[in-house]
Length: 92
Image (cartoon, rainbow, N blue to C red; front, top):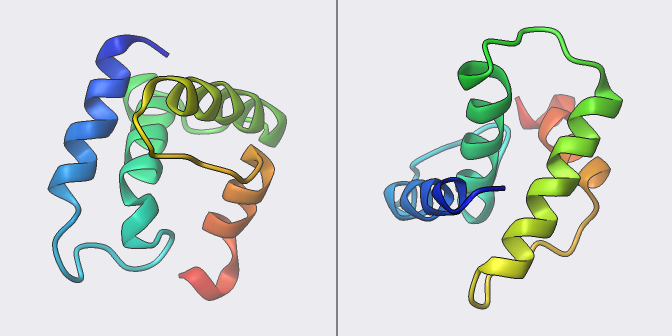
């Protein structure tokens, strides 16, 4: 993950910190992670059909980089756990 991607995560995080900003696949706490990651993987890369193993690998790399570079903001779960949580039927 580049410095600009961490900056993107930080700016997305500040833009989604308001009340009731997002519902569905993410909580307010992880909205920046969800939006930044999915936007980079699907929109910026112009991809529409990626295998789950590739998503897990890319998110694992992103989580590692964020946990190394951010001050106090930690993502303790595995990439698979985050993806399963975001894709859960009850999340919309």
